[in-house]
Image (cartoon, rainbow, N blue to C red; front, top):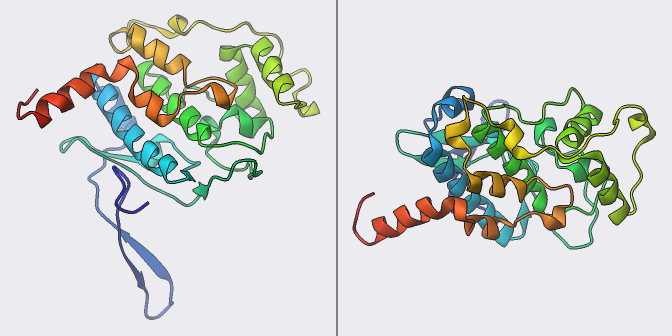
Length: 253
């Protein structure tokens, strides 16, 4: 992954002469903690940084790698330089169609439904769910967006937004059964319109394109989610693509 767009650069590996412990030396990013930075970002900033993150995901997915731990803690942003880096490749894995993977990956609030219902044949779309959770948290100013107390409650929190009927349709599609632990936990919930999350505090960040974009990422069925490449072509990023085109033509936005 080294040298990929917006992927943290590994500079060296050194070993402590006494303990023989190896250490990885990475490029330095003057990161601002996301809990401090995200509430200050405007509409264009969010479009810009999510587009930068998509460049990193498109690069790794195009090279056959799933990151499997996309979350704000693993996205370093130097806001002054407007530079983003995707870090922590410790859970990354090569994707092979039809292979079953460990579902004990990703961090709870960013785990895709496939991990929570034990669907082991997942793919790159897991990263797109995690990106969708990050994006929803940023535009709706609700961090984390799905705030489960444990892995079971995490699926309940998702079902309260995406709907229980839709969850059971997803389970039927892949011939899956829910863990009996969910009995009495799930209840019945109709799908909640994304507009219901708009408040006076976040309305300046939530455009029609933003809602369309989040709705195409946060889907139960991983096969229905946008790929990184499709996401970059979404109308939500038109201002970012236009600014980049102006810059490459010698103009500044």
